[in-house]
View: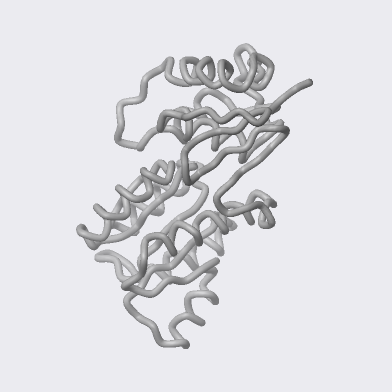
Length: 224
């Protein structure tokens, strides 16, 4: 899953980047509203974490513009403000959730996961397990259970499988998968998707992930 973090507090950003990475998320970071606006329109994010107080703009105004432009990406507002009327302003601007500073990172992770689940039509799924067609991804242990057998996953295997489970039976291009796997400023390896699809097939079965030549991949789960 890929997130956009728009925050100008360097200490908070450093901590959130670490925690989000451990949770299996790929996170792009900016402290500028203008760059956030550009990134959101160029990249398919699963959720945006948006601070209200930015150096070059007000986060509420930025969010309001996004919603007026038809951008419906889930957004969690972060702010040091805690008055009820300010929360109302945030929701009126189009925020999906609101978290006042200071906050526990674990609470933010739970809220992010809930928003993404809801956006994918899976609001009733367990918050720490994702399942599809006989494949269960345990987010706490970073493992996958297949036919009652548990396999450990590397960080990249975990990220890729999470992307597939969140978009089952959907054709995902190599470019889409690569974009979600990497930070926007990372050097992207051209063959990384093929390598980790191969790794996952060894654990899930050869038919779990279908290759469409010249198009991409489709996740089917366990096929009897």
